[in-house]
Image (cartoon, rainbow, N blue to C red):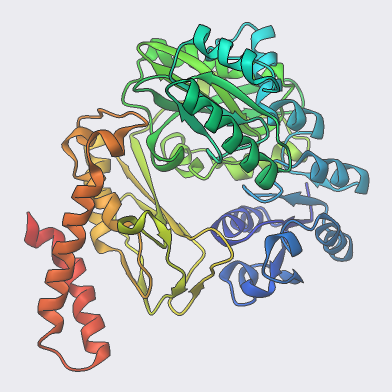
Length: 489
C-alpha cells in the first residue's frame, strides 16, 4: 500500500480523495494555486505546496510542477480527481516514466477511450451497439453532407477529444450542419487543442444512463449498477440519481454486461464509467469516462462501496474484493450539484464571498463540499459549492429528503442554482420520472425557477423590511429561506 498520495486537484473532490487516504492511514499532499491559498482542501492535506498563479494553465495543468512536488514530498502515487489532468494520457505517461503510480487507467487505455472516434471504432469491433454516425473525423464537407442525409437529420457534431458537452452542436438541415461543423471545430481546437470532430445521429427524447465500472489488474471487472443522468443543460449534468427509474432487472443485466465488455475492450483498469444513450427501448454506447465521476456518491450510497478507496487499492495492485453477484442496490439516491451561478441569467457564474453558509443535515443527507463561511468562490475555476446527496428507502423518500435539504441550505453572498433544483424536484414530471435530456426545455423548468426566486425574494424582503441592521436582515432572509417550504405547502 502507498505511504503518501498527492492529490492533483482542488475543491471538494480533493477533500474526498484525502478523506479516503486518511482513513487508510495514507499521508496526503495538496497542490494549490495562489487563488486557493486559503481553500479548505489545502488546509486539510498533511502537506500543501503552491504550484503557480490562479490560471489553470499556469498551475493545475502544469505537469512538471506537480511531478516536482510529488518527488520532493516522496509521494508514491497521484490521485487526479476529475477534470484538469484526470483524462490526460500525457500526464499518465509522465507519471509512469517518473515511477509514480497514477490512480486510474494506463496511458494506453486512456488514449484508446479518450478519443471518441477511436472509441466508436473499438466498440464496433467489439460488437457493442453505437449511435448511427461516422466513425472518422470530418474533413470533407460534401461527403459529410451526404452522410448526414443517409443518417437522417437531426445530427449532432462533436469534438473527438472533448468532454462535458463542450462544443456540441445540433443540426436540423444542411445549412445548420455547415455552421455546426465550423463552430465545433473552432471550439475543439481552442479548448482541447485538437480540431478533430465527428458526427452522429441525434436521438429524440433520449435518456442518459451510465454504468460505474471497477476493474483490477488481474482481469476482474464488475459494474456497480447504473446512474440516471438525464437532467442536463447544454449536455452538462445537473441532477443524477441511482438506480434509474426506467431500469428493469433484465435491462440492467444486459446493459451491465455490455458496460463490462466495453471496459474489457479498452483493457481498462481502475474506476471508470461507461455511458449510454437509451431511447425507445434501445441503448447505444456513448463514451467512456476514464476517471472518477462527479456523481459517484450516489452509487456509493446505494451500494455501500467506497469507490475512492477501491481506486487506491486497485492502483496498489490489490484484487477486487467483490464479485458481480455481491453487488446489490439498497434504496435510492439523488445528487444535486450546488453551484454559484444564476439560473435566471443563463446560469452565469456568480463568484464572491460566502457571508453566510450552513449546509443541511439529518437522515439520509450527505454534503460533499470544499467551502466554508467566509470562503470566496473564485472566478478562475468551476463554480461548484457542493454536491448535495439525499438517500431514501425508495425514490419518493429520496425526493422528499432532497427537497427538505434544499430548503434547509443557507448560502448568502453569492447567487446559487438552488432555486433551479427546487423547481425540478417539485415538478410533477420529475416526480413521475418522465425524464429525458430535454427535460428543462420540454417542461419549461425555468419558468418554475422564476416563480421560486420571486416567492423567496418576497418572503425575505417582508421579514427584512422590519429589521434595522444588515446582520439582522441577513438573519431574517436566512430564516425566510429556511421556513419557505413549510409555509408554501
